[in-house]
Length: 388
Image (tube, rainbow, N blue to C red; front, side, top):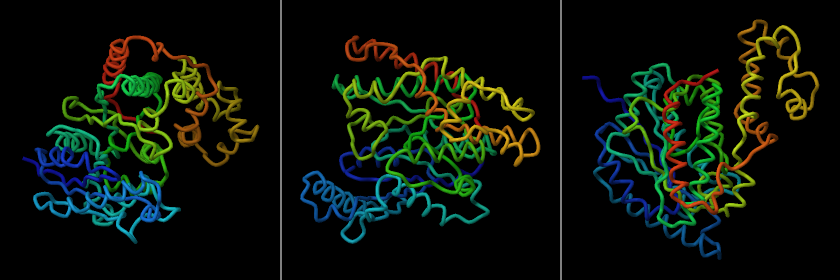
């Protein structure tokens, strides 16, 4: 029987005391036992002297979390204290992006060069549920696909029972799934959903990608995009029963965008920010990609050319790439790196969009059915590898 790979589980924590028992129970129940948990309890240093009631409550919550973690003896755990007085974040270095960077870099520094290709980092959030086979499924997935850099793990948000919150959550999740389905169907190399609680990757791949860029939000998207550009990413996997996480769809304003801020928005606000782009926009992206080989020979207009000229502030989009990349394969790859996931999203924002249903007024059971339809469709498409 093959030896179980060592897995490092990276979990940022801020104001997570209420979720601690559930998280620890899920970790204790894992069938895969060869893992170390790295937890970064964090908050800005300035909150220790703040008058704001929320900030003071977070300081107290984090202090109690640290006390609870210090008493745990039955789990292999490393606790990084970026919360206690004198150890909090400076103004220029704070937020979940920095917490993930501190965690990933600490894990990476502890792994030797020879072990880097097999050592796995599983990125989680403290409010995320997963079953007893999760770490085992991640290990098996990467063992069966030894050239992979990372896995974009499927997710499913449990509903809270509060209709207002659930309507907002269902709209946001349907938006993400609609986007993912269309990106998968056009064969985009950037067809991934980036959630900090739903990523797994090898230490070697993390090093090759140059690590994570710490941001107040969106750091998971940019890290997954790096994995696509420097290796191969699996979206999904064979084990649909165990290779899935269930993050809470709770209200949060700790980051500028993502599930928490989306659930905090009114539906009208969501409609202006999280758009259901029409299929014509995605087909324009597909057609642009299909013309990259022709562009190696000579200039030709693509559906994205006008947008790219505006974004890049140049009328000469392709000849610099031809000069720098002397064969067609390298040129096409350079084009795909230029027209990346962020550029595609920016382009789609210039296209028409419309909600598939009236999320504010149709029965919530209809929204649940729409989510299930999208989820089933996405899972049927997901088992594939994306790369440049």
